[in-house]
Image (cartoon, rainbow, N blue to C red; front, side, top):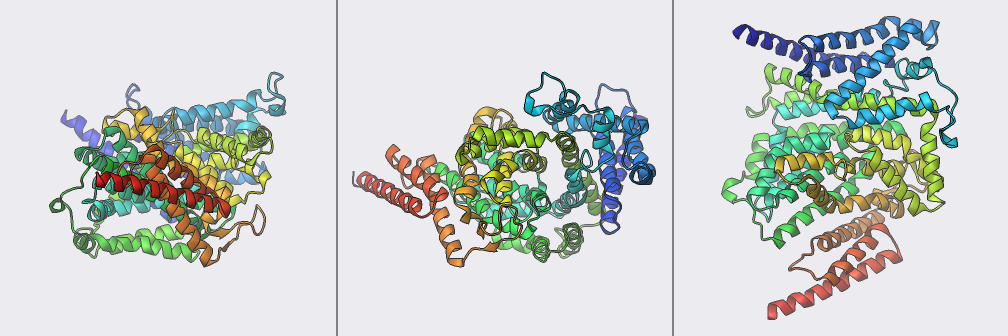
Length: 633
């Protein structure tokens, strides 16, 4: 028994050493670049090997996972040693060995993805992968017919080119996504998670429904860094959900608060779960422009969730946490406030157009140095090695998702299936902008089901966003539109993984939790339509330069201020309408007027804004009369 325990320790130490080496090699490659195909294949194949070691299947014999790890390494080493021959002598034309290793790599990707993310994404990838095998047969719809494809066409595309498994999705994962996950691991080891929680507790803990507001604030910040709503629910929800239940929140509503805040973190600048960097690479729009364009919508989303949480607490007479149990803001900032400096450096460097990968590495080193300022946060060699190990492990979920998405992208590129989906949306939309937007919304939510934010964005940007080009919608607007709905698939049935994860912690009903999360995220579902009908919400003049323009000028300051004021009022009105409470309970007439007024104010301008403000004022006047009558009685 003791010998077995020692063997387990040796295995664990070996896996930890491999994870640390995996992270260090990524840091080294940042400043010593290698060819794209080799960098991406190393990131993928070695990462797949780590997945098999870290997510073993119990029913298999001992040692199988190490055999799979070795096979994964062979898939990379083959490309490494054959690279010159592949790109020069053979010009990317596959031979028998290429095809065999391509099939093996594809199967490894599907199995690793199943182990980490579940069956949804592998099944979706298999559906797409099966298409070119049958796309030339007579039973296929006319629009989906293609020429026959052989194994060399299909698997050569997936393995030998940067348009398949090693596509831009894996390229993003191998560079800045991995590094920002690693940055988050270093922040976590230095106590950033505790800092966010303590700050939120100090700022909002004693207010009505305080723990719920703590959940919104802390989950929003952490969700922006870690890039996975589900992982964020599991990480922060274990702390926030029991606190919410303790002061009287319904278990389903408590889970919904955590799910909606974690999903919202994916749209919160500056990091946006690393999706902002992929969007910049995909659209050609600068990162700074995307981050600033996403800022006001993200603020509106979190403001709306906070207001609904507040009105729910007032309506149900839910108190905050006793002040004696809360940390003082000055004490929190004194102990750990210096750990906000790496985030500040991150924003400064990104605004100066420093290469994104360099920014991540610089902030990692800066985080370590800054942590030495205080004993509470000081990182020693054990913490640094632990962060390197944590970063490697946490990156694997994104890596396998991006690799599986690469299969989808490869098939779509080979067969032009993306164009078929785009044209189908355009045809079904029948020239109606609103109908086309609804179809694109539905397509984005279906394509984003069960996916982390990054692969959800990549798929929706490839398959759904081009459908909006026929309406002369600027590329940044169309990509933000599909991105929002792709990540909101995490809280919408039937595959609401973030809601289901929260329900598991709260011991609530998954479907009820999901519907509460939709209710809390109502403004989030409206914001993408505001991108189209009230484009001032992104603070840039998107009408200049055409739909493919990648540079935009800021709107005049008076227009920006007017937009901020109008949208904030609209969000307040919508929150009151949804929760049915302001000073006292609101009657149905006030709720309807508030809701319609809020929608008009958020989605329109000019006369629509005037009508929206008028309805809100009328509703407020009616509510004031009822409140006064209630007091007098």
